[in-house]
Length: 186
Image 1 (cartoon, helix red, strand yellow):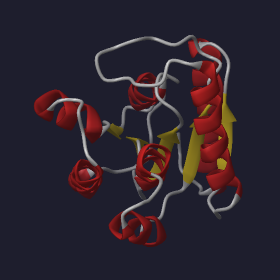
Image 2 (cartoon, one colour):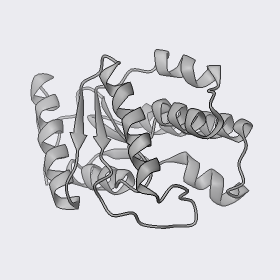
Image 3 (tube, one colour):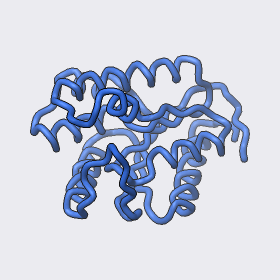
Image 4 (cartoon, helix red, strand yellow):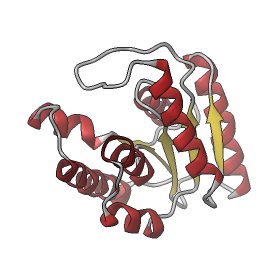
């Protein structure tokens, strides 16, 4: 484990299709760096309201994600790992409903992050009560949507692939490079 000189906040977002290890990676990174992480609000929302969601529900989920992120990053120092951002909400809206709320698009423009970790679909699918797209074709289509977003935005990003251990190692290497570039003491 490493300790961090907490002089400035660096926000690292973990994104990708469902069942690609995003939550696990966020938890592992937060433990590794003794830092905070922001869970995915959609899980909480869908468990409380059911999985028969509407386009309007996705707006509420996006607002809940923003509120959760802001509440955790407000008191965080050093590194904070974020499981899901508005890019995820954009992909979800467009994949399911073929349109996206302007609120989500506006938040994409306003919010600034320091690094994206894009999780590939090379982990085996793990079913749970909230996941919707176990077929390889959907997972790959979603991954391409995320990768296109990463290529066409300005924040540094790294593709995360391999087994859970390899993913953690690659993520730690990427975060360490970010910290070194910003003179953060790890």
